[in-house]
Each structure stands twice: as C-alpha cells, then as structure tokens.
Length: 551
Image (cartoon, rainbow, N blue to C red; front, side, top):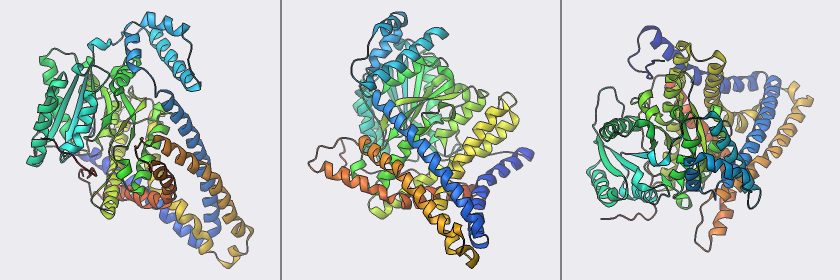
C-alpha cells in the first residue's frame, strides 16, 4: 500500500486522525495514574481490590517473562561457540550439508544439542520451500555508521571489529554518514579513519549529509537515508543487485564480534522471505560497562533483557537500535523516515505497512556491543540517561501513524492489525504507568483509608497479599541478577569478582530507576506528544574513561 509514513503536511481528516491518536497514549496513561489516585482517596476498597488484581496480573506476567528470558538466554548461550562461517559454507552446498546434518551427532552437552536441533529445523525448512538460495559469494554487507558528534575514540573500535570479521572483509562496504553540521574535529576524525581502514574493506566512503534539507528533521534517520541513497547509486553503477546486499545501520559506538557478519549472513540465507525481513541481534551495552554508574548498568542490562524476551515472539518483534535488513527491502519501502526521531523502530512499521503486513523481524541469537551512557560526572550521567530513555520512549510517535495506516489499508487482515496495534499501544502504556502503580499508588488505599475501611478484613489482608506477591517476584529479581552477571564482559583485574558482587547489589536500585529513569521519561514523551510539543533528535553523550586518539 502506498502510504505517506509521516505526521507532517497532513490535511483534513488525516490531520484530525493524527492528532487524535497522538493524544490517546498520553491521555490513557494519565487517566490510569490520576484515576487510581482519586480512587485511593475516594474509594479505597475499590482501589485496593484493583491494585491487588493488578499486582497478581503483574506477578503472573513477570514470571512468564522470566521464563522466556531464561529460555532466550539459554538459546543465546547455546550459539556462543557456533561456527557461523561453517554454516554459511554448508548452505552454499545445501544438499550435501543437509545429508551431513542427518548423520551428525551433537558433541558436548545440552547446549550443543539445542543448537544442532534448530540448525536442522532451519535447513529442513529451507530445503522444503525450495527457495532460491543466497550464495555467500554473491552477498555483500553494507554498514552505515551515522556520525553527528562522535569522535574517533567512539567510532574506531567498531571499525576495527568489522575489519576483523570472519566473513571476508573484502565483501563488506562501510559508509561513514557524517552530518554537515558536525564540528570540523569530527570531520577530520572521519577522514583519518577513512585513510586508516579503507584498504581493509571492499570499499569505504564518507557521505556528508547536507544540513537543512527541506522536509527533514535533524535526526539519524535523515542522515542514514541520504547515505543509503548515495550508496544505492554506487551499487547500481557497480551492477551489484540490491537483493545481494545486506545493509546494517549501526550506532556509531557499535562493536561486533568476529563472527557477527557470518552469523548475519547465515540468518539471511536461511530466511525464505529474506527480502521481506529485518534481522535483529541482541544489543548489550558492554563497551564501557565497568566505567558506568550502577544505575546505568541496571537500566542498560534491562534493555538487553527486553530484547531477549522479545526474541521469543518474532511475530511481535520490532527493530531496535543497530539492526539489519535486505537493501532491496529498504529501497522498496522508501528508506528510513527522514522526519522522525525513532528511525530504528519506524523503519519496521514503514516496511510492514508498505508490504501490507508481509514483513517480519528475525531474531538473531548473537550479540553486538555498544556504549553505556557515561558523562563527565554522576549527575550529568543521570540527566543523559533520562534524555536517552525519553528519546527511546518517543517511539510512541509511531502509534498515530500506524493507526492511520491500519485504518486505510484493506489488505492487512483485521485481526492482524488489532494484534499489532494493541501490542504497540499496550507496550507504551505499561512503560509509562506500571512502575508508578507498583511503587507509589499501590500503597495509597491504606494511607487514605476511612475508618470503615481501616476496620475491614481487606485493610489488614491487602499489605500481606501484596507482600507475598513481591516476595514471589524476588525469583525474577534473582534471575535477572544472575543473568546480568553472566552477560558482563571479562575484565582482567584482580578485583573483578568484587566488582561483579557489587554489581549484583546495584539491582536494589530498581525501584528508583524504573520510576524516575524509565516510567517518567516515557510519561514525559507521551505528554509532549499529547500536547503537540514535538521532540528533536538528541545525540547521547558517550565518553570513554581513557580515550586514545590516533594521528
């Protein structure tokens, strides 16, 4: 369906619908919070019953998510030692590879057996469908790295990691997408990196995104789109088919493991609908995790956990942060939106609508690493974390556009539209309200209790019920602590064990972080959208503790 995936230049009914759906999320969140406050004061019995019911629902959902978190982490760890290039070469000779897999026995423990099970299933499915296979010798990787104010010490570790890829670097093209408005120091750094790494790849270029282009916001999506369009001309001139190119849009601080592009190639090869799919790895914020304050570590680890849980339900998975997709799909869908802040999630919805719902996200059970937020001091770090989470929460801007598209598109089944609309809406409402309900509002009925209520059985039972619920929830907390420690990078220091123990205790900061650095930024973003106070793109400040600059 042809649809203008934008909130700008709308007229008449479209404009009114856009404003209505912009108001809905913020209005719903504030109604839930204020409504519960009023109930706690005016009808504490009703409020107490609702709070207990909500706490029970929250507990069941928490245990459910914890179970899938464990399963997803186990799947991730089972692929840790996978020879991805071996799998890629196997798919190039699929018939022989399929026969060898039937005879192969998993060596090792349960993890190896799980990895082999999923490999056999994917290969068998690919063989049955009979889809024309993508041969690795024909595939190219395009890596776009948008740069606004990131210096060499932020960008270079990622370039170095790409150059060390198991997948042949001579089939990887890197584009540094530099903003024209960037400081001269940033442009000088980009040119220095080009000289240092150009010979290590198939090709490497700097594309400068002109400032002030009509219809564009000062956002990463506009920069990435301009660079992608310029690169499309390059591939056309080289007669490289777009369907043979896998494009990855990386944050400038993204660092990959040597086997990352081999893994991505494998997932691309075994996906029958590869030209109608995005590929989402699990982001971890480990580059500078030992230099980050405890609050930052807990929040960023929580973001990784969220992606792990989402990976278990691909039908509802949406692209986040650094992601990949077929370059042909990107071109067909019209590239990233140039006037939106949430480009990483918006490209999924834009492609989903363009292809009438026949578009999906394939979870990749591999990680890539980025920087946690670290500023000059503790207070500035907290401010930057708040701004970063508010920018992520600004993904709510997709809701009104998606709703308009769903009302217009008759080719997407109604149930499919309702399922995705509810997921998008409910996710943002839960983000903005749950922490407030659990931390503050849930205890108010007892505080505002009338004499009649204070002598009721419910008054005495409610705290005990809620206490039992939170005690049961401690299982999820302990699980999160253990998995977060397992996700930490190795540190060659004698006191690393002490640091890891200290890191476990930092999870006690969850009530503060979830309210003030997660729910509040989300409510802030929804409120701004509700009143039409649209945000501009804010580039997260990320600093290295001991930056090393090259010449």
